[in-house]
Image (cartoon, rainbow, N blue to C red; front, side, top):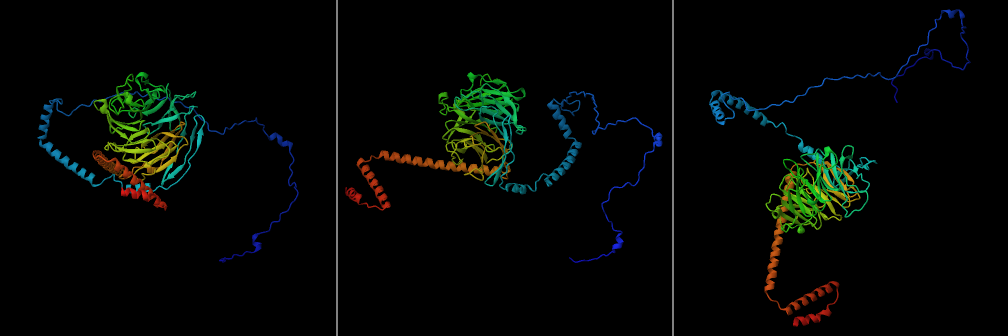
Length: 602
């Protein structure tokens, strides 16, 4: 290091050096007491002073004057007419209008106002103040979502056996975050969560129907109660008490306090959540369904009190909660159109869409999907079409919220997409065949090509047919128990799943699976239309081949054949097959050469 400046000073300039050493204590000054000074002191009484280390608080009460509220109303009637003109008289009012319009002042005023109005309109059309300049950039940024996996938290509440688990799970470049909670049935005897229904007001509550679907379940102490869960503290908000378990629950979209339920014994009940957990009214057993009610939905009516239900007894019944003493209408699901209950197919799923208020879909135990029209005149005409494609029961059927003529069905090992325009053909699209059963499914309420399915191995699949049609975009192992119920919120971001043991898993999916992209609706509609046309062409080709085969078979029947010739032809074909197999294996064919020469000579 280079030295820039140097300072010097003499040692004597620092002062005398200090030398320290250890010495014993010594008395420097000793002043003895002087008794003569005691008379100058004045004795005082002892003084006590207390100090509290806290602010001194004061309590004050104020009683404000009560505000006197009054109700007032305004009755607006047509005014501005002269006294001699009666506004209720159409002839007088039209005559007065004609007189005013002929006035020159009126014409000049209209022309002046018209010029000002035209100038304002031109200003508004010049610049779009609501234009989004960076909408495309934000959309592209949202697509690029890096794969990630992250555990959020975990906790449990012993009083209702609530536990929270969280993680990020990624498949195919898309992530999903498990948030919230894993609710279990508070009952000591575990029951299946058969149906979920979110509260229409932003999903702040979740109604869960708990029921054991095992035939002749004889477990003791089994509860018949279902619950409404509060999403904030994750605890039961209301207990729905019944004499029979509830298989399905549904909130009224028009009156949020009304909750509709279908029971295991076939009854239809409804609750008013403002009045507690006891049902307001129930249908009589003798006029209700004979089997469990697997579907109960509200209808869009003026009063908001109409609903309908379907059961495995083969009936669809319409009700009005103002009068549940008997059904207002009845339909037998007899596809032979003979209106016979003995021929009816058992309904195990039901769907209704507001976009088609007179039509509804019924999934049956036999694998058929029945498209019904309530406005038909006779009961046989109400069964419009029947779609066959599933081998087992159709556990879920749902119309697309964006394409009403397209609907989804879930059954056996596949989920299928159908089009009402292809009446005689099979499904236009379908998923691959899974090893476990598919037990429920539904569309995404915000994305037209996204739908959800749940499997018996506890896996939730999220499909996006615009990107992947052979594999799901996201697969999540939610539980070791089978998943039997599924329902997303209206925002498409939160999804609820119910297991066979009564556990409710709440899932938050990534933004790419609930954010609507540009032109996604048109692309999805185009895809469904293309697949429908392709399926129709294939169906026409198959019919043509069947007709041709029938004509050939008919022509062969008309031409008599010689039995001896048929026998010789069959024998020749048999030896040709054996010879070809021996040549393939490299063996000799001498064994059959003589017999073949004899056949040719004959």
